[in-house]
Length: 246
Ligand SMILES: [Zn+2]
Image (cartoon, rainbow, N blue to C red):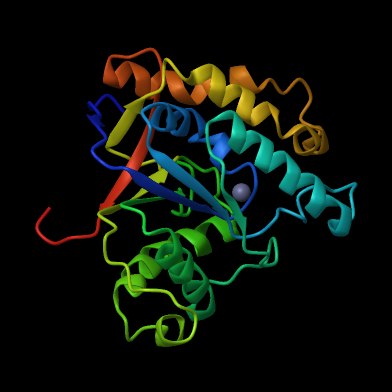
């Protein structure tokens, strides 16, 4: 844990963030997004599900609407104007070709240089288990980025849907990964990240975590990587380069 973290490359203009659920970005990467949109970069969110199975006391039909609205607001707070909802079923996502197809189309539509997703390893470090949807999405993101560049993979998207192949993604970055070796200074945008998480009010209330304080929670994650980077706060990322020889 005492190893230094390498600053992330910030020489890019467009990023696409693909995560399983509303709130995923806000638990690990919203302050970093606020930094990047503040630099004039374009960041787009893609929610694979609408998190409709995320509140025990609320039926999915109602929950979907509530959570989509909260996500749009939390994105707005960090400078993200476009939030796509793919509408796949919350809680039961499967890694495989159908998911890769959906994500490849997203990559072809938005043509990002960087694709961001959440930690998709088995744990958050230690014994805290990751969740099945996060693992399915992260694995599919890595594949879909390569699928998107090959015109003969999901070729109907090119021949029938008006999409062009896009091979311009330089790297996939996973936030919250326990083995991340890179990070970004989020000291100046930390408050925006907190406000972005607070926008998930119904979800946070539904968790029933007594005394949950978004600021305190995010500080607990941002301070240790910050001290490894020599900043007050930082957000760590695992970098998966898409080229060879890096
Ligand atoms: Zn999630």
